[in-house]
Image 1 (tube, helix red, strand yellow):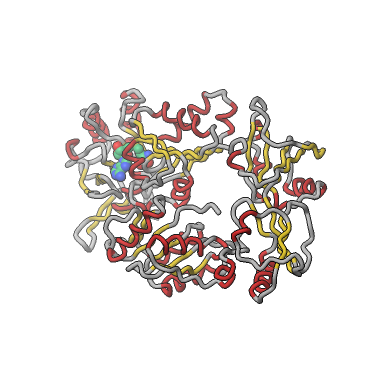
Image 2 (cartoon, rainbow, N blue to C red):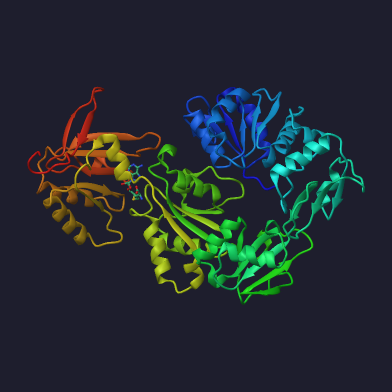
Amino acid sequence: MSRSAPAIVILGNGSLATARRIQQLYPNALIHGLVDRVEGADRIYSDFGANLRQLYQQDTPIIALCAAGIVIRTLAPVLLEKGVEPPVLAVAEDASAVVPLLGGLGGVNDLAREIAAGLGVAPAITTSGELRFGTCLLNPPSGYALGDLELGKRFVSDLLAGESVRIEGEAPWLAHAQLLESEQARLAIHVGNSEREPSANELLIYPRTVMLKVGREVSAQTLRDALHEAKLAWQSLACVVADDTRMASSGLRDAVNELGVPLRFVSASEPHTAGVWRALGNGLSVSVADVPLDPQQIGRARGRLAVIGLGPGAAELMVPAVKAELARANDVLGYETYVRMAGPFRADQVLHCTDNREEMQRARHAFELAVQGRSVVVVSSGDPGVFAMAAAVLEVLHESTDPQWHSVDLEILPGVSASLATAAQAGAPLGHDFCVMSLSDNLKPWSIIEKRLDLASQADLALAFYNPISRSRPWQLGVALEIVARHRTPHTPVVLGRDIGRPGQTLRVTTLGELTPDQVDMRTMVIVGSSTTCTFARADGREWVYTPRWYGQKP
Ligand code: SAH
C-alpha cells in the first residue's frame, strides 16, 4: 500500500534522538515539535491536540512519541468520523516500545514492524489475524481491493477459529500467509475480476486489472453500467483513460472521482496505450490485463498548477489549503527566499529556485512542468495576487495558444498580504477605505505613481505602500511622502511593519511629519493613515492605531 510520509510528533527535546532514528527509516517524514520545547524540529506546532487531529483528518500517518493514552484521548473526538483511517502509533521516547494504535487497514502493523526492527525492539502487535497469518488478509497490497470489509471480518474470525481455506485465483502475496489450506475447505478466498455475488463462505478479492477508455462525456453510472454489461467487477477498475483533449472536462473528472479511481490521459498522437481494447459501444472500450495495473504507468495525469500565497511568513498565518497544496506538490518554483520559507520539503519534491526578476520565465516553466502531469506550485509571499506571481501566471496563459497549457488544472490560493498582516498587528489602520500601491517604478512609469499618490491622498484614503524603497530606487519614497504631505497633516499616524510574521519582526508607529525614508527598507510595509486615523495607548505602553468605520459625522 502506498503511504504518504508519516509525521513524527514529539513534545520535548527528550524524544528528539528517537525521533531522528525513526526519521532515518522514513527520510520524507517530518518531525513536528512543540513550540518553545523542541529545538530543530521540521515543523513547529503550538497546540498538540489540534495538530494531531489535523494530521489524522488529513490522512497523515502519525508516529507520536508519547504515552499511548495521550494519543487515544486526543484523537477520541474525531475517531467516529472516519471510515478509512491513517496508521497511528505510539512510540516510547526511549525507543523501548512501539505500539500500533489505529489504522489496522491502513497498514499500522507493517509500520510498527518496520519501526520496531529499526529500533531493535519487538512491536506490540495485538491483531490476532496478523499474529496468526503473518499478514492482514483484510488489507491486500496495492493492486488488489477487498470486496466487503464486514464479511471479511467474519471470515477472518472463522479462520482464527481454526478453519481451513481454499484459494481460488492468482494472489501471489497470499502465498506468504500462514493459512491452513485445503482443497476441501468450506471457506474460500476468491481472487478475480468478474462481477460476482459473494457466497456466504467466500472472501472476495479483486485484482485491479481493468481499464475503461472513454471517448465522450460520461456519468459514473454509465461507467458502472458498462462494467456490469461486460460482467466485470467495478472494484477491479484500475483507472479510466481518456483522450487528452478532454483534460479540462469537469464532468469526466467528477464521474471518475465518484468511482474513486485515477483518471489518466493519452494523446491521440502517442502510440496506443498498452493493452488490448475491446469496444463496448457507447463510446467506451475496455481492456483487461492478466496482472494488476499500475495507473501511474498509463498515460499521464492532468497536470496541476497552484499559485499560492505563503502569508507574511509565520506558519500559523498560512491558510490550510496552501499547506495541503505544498504537501501534494511535485515541483515548487519561486524566488529562493520564499521557496525556503515554504519548506521543509521531502526528498522527492523538486525545487526550482530562481531570481526574483524572472517572473514570466518562471510562469512559463511552471506550465511546462504541469503539462507533464505533475503537481506544480508557484510560491509568492503574502497573497499571490498582490504584486506577485498570480498575474504573471495568468498573463503567460492568456498569451499562450497551447491547448495543453489551457487544460492544466490551475488554481490560485490566497494568502495574508503584508498590508493586512501589518495592519492587524497595529490595530486597524485600514479599517475604512484604503488604497494599496506599489512604489516600484520597475514595471510602471514614475509619473503614474505620482498621479495616483496625489489623487489617493486627495481622496483621503489610508495608504499601504508595497516595495517602498530599494537600493536601485533610493529617492522615490521621499518624493512620494512629499506628495502625500500636500494633503495630510504632519500628525497623520504612520505604521512601519518590517519582516512582519518573520523572525526579528518590528512594528513602529510614527507620524508623517517624523517619517524619513531611511527608516524604511524593502522589507518594510508602510501604512499612512487618513485624516480620521487615530492612535491611543495600549496597556503595555505601545500604541493602537485605527481608522474608524464612519466618515464625516459620527453616526
Ligand atoms: N505578495 C506580497 C507582496 C510582494 S511585494 C504580499 O501580498 O504581501 C514585496 C513588498 O511587500 C515588500 O517590499 C514589502 O513592502 C512588503 N512585504 C512583504 N512581506 C512583508 C513582511 N513580512 N513584512 C513587511 N512587509 C512585507
